[in-house]
Length: 278
Image (cartoon, rainbow, N blue to C red; front, side):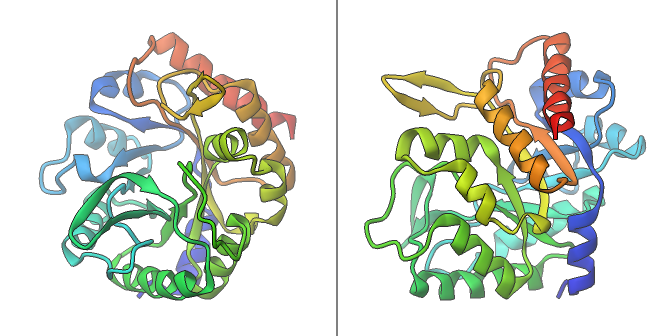
């Protein structure tokens, strides 16, 4: 089991400004100046055969964080041992300071949801998720951080706000937080949830790092596509977060329709400017 002191050390580790590593932009990521860390989708790599680019970055001392998308700690089923083993193998092979995943429902009864769905924020659900998180922590060689998701809908019987749910989960398990300010913005636009109120209620001293991403508006709905420049409203939320607490790292997610090296460098500069506002 990861000791509490190790969890606190990972949360406090200074990562700087980073970018999501994708095979389509591997050379771009290597060339970008000032990249403090990178994040790789855990399901897209094999620990025994890491991409050469990740080895190059590690050789330069750039931390690489495995980011899982399929563990499903938000379901009634206990975390899959095979998936946990893969996350642990990725962390060991990459010498990662921590592993991140989503607080989401992804499968049940053998069926895959196809989306990162919100969990019911009830006391009963919290009890199940606390145990799932503890099982995951026991299985990983490094601390775990959980990300808030962009919700497609809200459950009608929620007893807690997302911030309250996350705060109690952190208090009971010691898990770190990966705060996605783009997801907070998405939930504000689509579901009317106040993003700044969430920042006020979240335990920001437990933030391991932060996600920033862009998307597109269509018919009044914000689509968190990770294929465009983060809007100013998202960067304003980042500045608001940084005014409340200094996050150890902030990472730009970009998953398709990749722009030029110069454009991505400019986006990292916009993130640094937003952080400096605080």
